Amino acid sequence: MNLHSAVFYTNDIEKVIPFYRDTLGFEVEYIQDSKFVSFIFPNGARLGIKQKKEDREIPGAQTVFISVENIKETYNKLKSNPNITFLKELVDDATWAPNFSITDPDKNKVQFVKEK
Image (cartoon, rainbow, N blue to C red; front, side, top):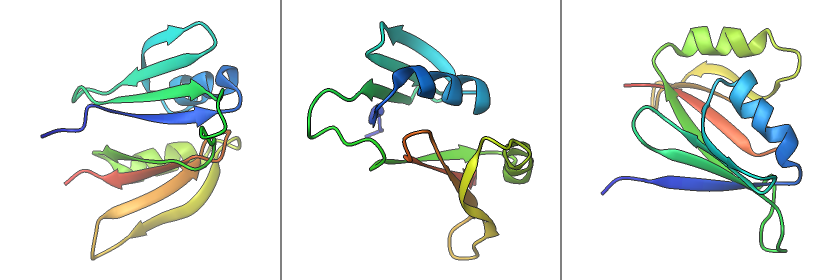
């Protein structure tokens, strides 16, 4: 069994598309008007982001984990961007893996972890 996709919710799809595409470098799979965007990863997993329409769709309440080969390089690149808000600085967690986290424009958490 493998994860196929996950969905975040946003208050402003026009803000999150450039954040994930341009700032984080995620590959856009498709954009559906101003309603939905899908990002695809090399392993085939997808992250969808949907414009909030219903009360149950709560922007800022989701978390996604992204594994990267070179965690220090990724951290330093994002750290140099003044538009990135960090929740947790890079730590080398002996019980888990080196990791750090940031927030997107809606305060959804993006956790980066070193690939094992």
